[in-house]
Image (cartoon, rainbow, N blue to C red; front, side, top):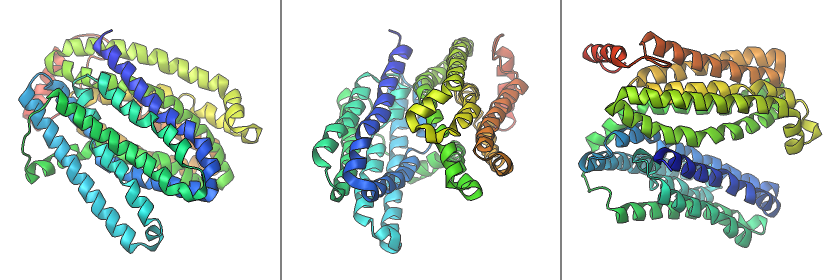
Length: 432
């Protein structure tokens, strides 16, 4: 099995654990904690996830790419590892300070102080889990076993310990402790491999890391925020029932899109490495990736469209019948999202076109907002779904146009002409 296929398999295992474990414990938690207790648990998990987003910053893109390029240089690899890890620790410390200030000054949060502090074990665990490093060196075999074990052990822990609405703290603690132990085990595993040497990192380097990753982080954060905000805006405009229909279709869509993540994560370090060593080989690999991706997303989009009535009825019941048309509008989002991921993450980022990549994603936020207000006003949940498809299509078209303007050989040709453009742009003010 090639390294790429092996890492893809390992990432699929990790992705499966991420989604399957919560699904296995969901009915038990909902029954044991009752609506009020389950609501408290959900609030803590969402609140903690905001900090996890901050802790992860843009390292999955920036650090993975840099590690991939220097994978055979122990010193360079060590420098990148400690710069990234130190920056993550600094972000985690800042997040803890913010959390302490909030739980001791905001009355609504003070009521959940103990649970929120217990839940902060999850951001700490995320900080200690250098997935970006193992993706960069393209060696996820044993690391994925560590992560999978940590997640799967939450299932028996929940079933054995959580029984009544008074066990909310135990439910939070199980998630927090499991994430923390996974992070600690990852660090022990990395130490035992003797992969990196210790490198002292100054505060100036930490600030530099934050600045260099800011564009990617802001762009990704804005997309995450506007995607989740669509339901909130739709609720205010059309009411909770209409928002519920949209949320039902959107949740099924996101579950399907998550299946593409392991493929993208496995390909990214390989492309970053090849772009640095031999761009013709990189584009040869990318063309095969594009063909594979198109086959997968076209099949996925058609399957979602034609199975929408069955999927909605099976998952939500006949009361959610209006969600069928919502899901059909969303069915071709995987096609557009798959294309934009190949064009953006797999091509623009490795070529140094971070500013262009970020600008396109940031511009999609106001486009989403304006279009949503107009279409949701006239067409409700279907208008919101059409907005998502329109925005994703616009992102893919903008990325394709940008790459064609820079004569990037997407479908044929060699990279020599593009490289001369790239070098000339570098001399006149930075990356493409």
